[in-house]
Length: 163
Image 1 (tube, rainbow, N blue to C red):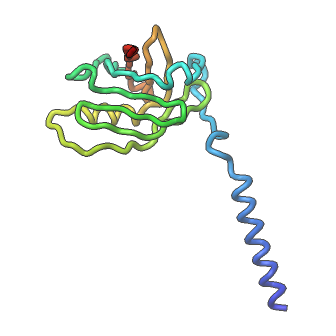
Image 2: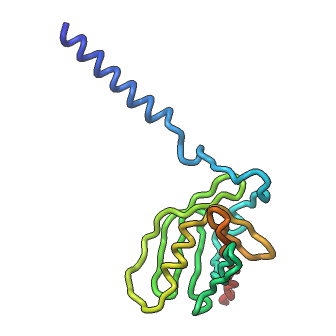
């Protein structure tokens, strides 16, 4: 009689594991939404596979932050959800996630570890960590920070074709 109980317990454990595996929502099925009244979404393909340079961040307080060294802070959103970029000191990479209605968030970044005195790297990557959505306006990529804290503005880097 003991072996029948053990077999039933093993079967219940297997069924529970299968239920967890197959009934758990997949990452792409969880789609966060912007608040009501937000601007309509744009297709990520309009900004993917292009290199963007940070021009400035406009905070909700009215203050503006711009890079001390223009052109050093970049991001590239690859179509496979990989993000890479540069700062005034290091390179970084990671992932990004896109949801419905313009939602965009970045995962943790892997970064080279060179020290550069006076770098704005922590400020730049800290703001990227707060991104919650994106829009494309007049050719500029705007990344909106959580809680309406501000907007990071990027322009597309035009690459010259080589012959």
